[in-house]
Image 1 (cartoon, one colour):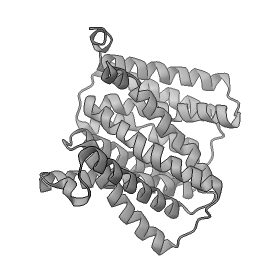
Image 2 (tube, rainbow, N blue to C red):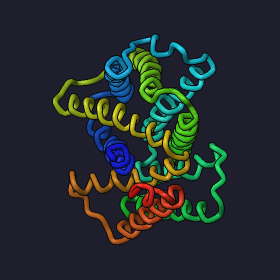
Image 3 (cartoon, one colour):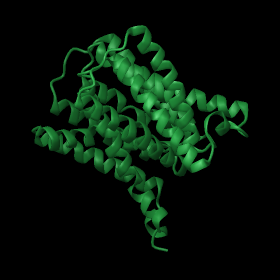
Length: 298
């Protein structure tokens, strides 16, 4: 009963945690450089995952990988490079190159259509139509909620690499038969080493203000740890495409948080686009899990 309830609310918990990242990062990097923030965040996540592994699995450090074959460790490492390093790095680089957050959201919205292609999942014409409808709704939301600016080629290229990295990473993760905790621990270790090295070369720049510390704690505990484990759980119980379609809702939930926190005004066209996205995601996941409603009652 508890497991079924968790499986039902897991997508909502993931969306709330993951979507909060855009707002929290925007506040956090006001008092720190991007690389310093990413390095501290990854290091904090590594510590938390290490503690969780010790408490949950009774192991710590390299002992966690005992019994895991070399090729499988290689896949976990590749997945970590894609999801934790390439995705985050090119995400920030696209913004730094002058790409607006709105255009970035549209590019990242391609992920639900990329994942079934990468995973070689056959969806059928109707499912692809639903994905296209959801993407159209996402474009409608972004277009109506913010001013569209000139699109820099470098920023667009970085955004494309970012969404491709996330698509490859999540697809790989859905096929890796390793404990989610162990995978997340190794991912954070790899990301920590890379980002600490880059921050050291670039120069550490951050001010330990109350707002910065709060943002860093949130991004570390809620997003890097909580949202990542929720994503890994979703990938372990569902198909890549069924999980990928949830990313359509990330900009929508972020916009909703903007409205609640910053009192941002939205237009009727934005609400219409949000409705199109929500219906598309519901229909797609309903087709993906046709027996969920009935099975939960037995």
